[in-house]
Image 1: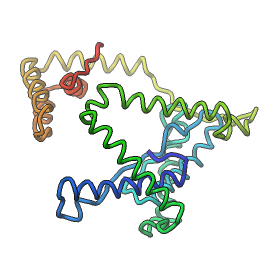
Image 2 (image 1 turned 180 degrees about the vertical axis):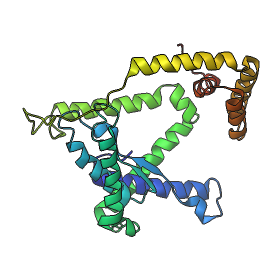
Image 3 (image 1 turned 60 degrees about the vertical axis):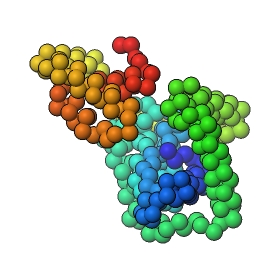
Image 4 (image 1 turned 135 degrees about the vertical axis):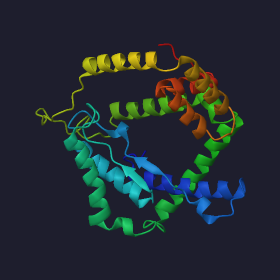
Length: 269
């Protein structure tokens, strides 16, 4: 994601690009220069969206989008201003699209490769981020890889710790959030939000799935899911067994469940 700390976000993506190229060349011996291109898709941060004065989120998403574009990302999805309250309405989703279009076609910043390169502050920040990110990668490898980092709870704890620190900064006003801990308004503009007919849609979907499961070949589904589980634990291409699973009638939820179970996660419904 691209957050609101403008220079830090630009430096983050630039550091990631450097590391990607180094790892591909030095660890994996990549010969084709195209293999070292860092292709990435970015969404503006949902964590920076506020429910207070939600229209301010349009400005936040625009700034975060510009940071991402200036850092050279390939794909961008700005969050909609009402996502702190509900799923986006057609209006808010369209405005998010307009952010991309205006940046792409009116500002001209997408025409220049790495336009902020050479700035002393940005280059030093990128250097620092590259070193810090490399340390985190090394730590994860020492733990046995990303699967072990997730299984042990380490990754989740890192995220929670960052959230707690940020919330404390907001509560102490060390970090100003416009409309939240400063510049509040007693009369906020009302916006239309998207309302989901949850009960009705759930009832219809449950009814459909019940009929779908009755009509399919249960044995074929069971065999297909077992193949998904077995291949998931190898380095083989997953696509063929996933296609077989879907053709047999396995649902997306069932396919996800067997992959979770394969690495030790099981959900009770």
